[in-house]
Length: 388
Image (tube, rainbow, N blue to C red; front, side, top):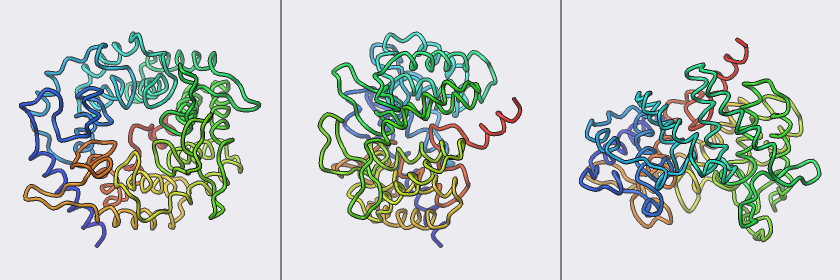
């Protein structure tokens, strides 16, 4: 019953999105988060490519007019940074998945020469996101140039960042701020370095990744419920508030912990992940989205189910799926959902319907790897590493 309800919801969401194409505009293609006006029209997080990615993954037929609009955009270095969620790397990833492989590779060549590539190390905006995309292209093509480009990023990471005992901070920003978490913190860097180790067998990347992960782990605190969580804010001014979301909290960091446990078998990682994942057991949240809402918590639970096989994680993810449906807005064109702060209907990947749709679709299919977005497939990684 739940699977059918989730399938029907995804279909109705895609119908709403496609009925609201804004082909006459140049600044956005679909109704999206207002932050698109401060970024660019195509980025994965709040731009058109995140929406097209979601529709592609959930089986919607994308009209040629949408492709024409995307191809008409001028993707230049002035308006497009090089990174994964806000820039050229993520756009390239989606172009590849949509079948526009030559364009995807040309854009990755552009990102490789971008003047801002080394301005930030993090996964969301910076070099680590570009590096993960290079590794994805390597796995898709087996062309060594992509692996070499990722290695260049890895070698650069090893030259930066102040050390703190066994930990290392790769994510100090130019103003001296450091944030915790997956998107802007060291956990995202740790994920890239783990992937790079798996594909190169170079132990220095694994050790560097562990040091990055240890930095974020060192700031975890115990909650009143006696599980671990992540304090919000800059490390110099941590707030007396815990965040359990994908962007900066428990849901993002635990995603990396599961992967380090799967590769290393270290009991410490399993124990911390098993405690931290409990922070995502929140059936109701203020927002439904992927970055800072229920969909991100649910997606993290699906990953926990994948890596551990424990049914309780899938059961909780399904509960969250049903709670998200409470946010739905039924319209003639289909089903819509509100975005950030519930201010307006938004179709985007990070705050709105595209990210929600991907999570609900994963619940409807319960296919093992349907919850991995802009990540490397564990099965494909394992198979490729065995061949080597």
